[in-house]
Image 1 (cartoon, rainbow, N blue to C red):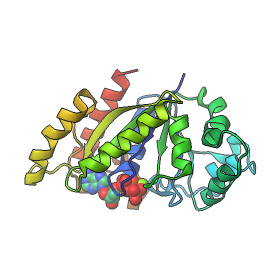
Image 2 (tube, rainbow, N blue to C red):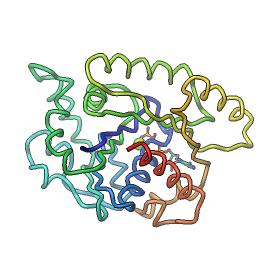
Image 3 (cartoon, rainbow, N blue to C red):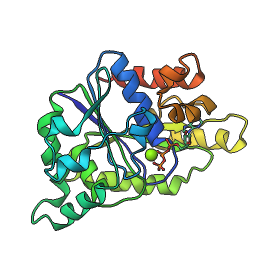
Image 4 (cartoon, helix red, strand yellow):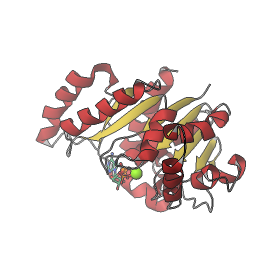
Length: 247
Ligand SMILES: Nc1ncnc2c1ncn2[C@@H]1O[C@H](COP(=O)(O)OP(=O)(O)OP(=O)(O)O)[C@@H](O)[C@H]1O
Ligand SMILES: [Mg+2]
């Protein structure tokens, strides 16, 4: 059975897409079959992998394409269901569903999860009916937190939302990942212990600030292609090891 892992936090610009893309890449390199699903209208995940598919998640959910037609093989072992502005129509369809609105996505995608070892979801910031649908499909949540701009309150509120969903569907906050860590920033040293205190073992070894991670998407490459010897590549490989260890 596939592990269905969503990279989520309501806050923007914390490293969700960077994590979704590079974790998916590392898992696929390790031989796992990965489906990366982008539920963001900005379609950044595809751009980061250098593909701009004409079709994607929206076409599949709206019934305009079969599953196999809607995805692209971005890399060996790495399939992508792209995001894009047509997801607005999906939100409309969800809002108009007569029953079980929150399970629209899960209902459509669940039959296909069995073909993969991992389903990774890259999500948009904010909290709308599509995000709620993602929570009802995912089993595990990985939350990237940017230490420099961390609002612990916002993070705790987000965990309450996951708890609320978990009353109806088994989903848990499994990983909290500090991103863009810079130990020279004083605030970082104060916040890390707070994070440990609150989330304990769920806190992963941080991803260091690494400019190579921010350069790679412009070349349509993941970090293991763009600069495999960078700290960014090392840190995402370490994260992948930890996640695979929990299989
Ligand atoms: N560890 C890092 N070191 C340096 N830059 C990083 C790191 N992680 C992410 N970035 C950069 O920070 C910016 C935001 O990252 P990213 O797009 O992954 O965030 P996001 O949470 O997906 O944003 P959004 O909420 O808009 O979808 C990007 O320019 C990205 O390249
Ligand atoms: Mg993003």
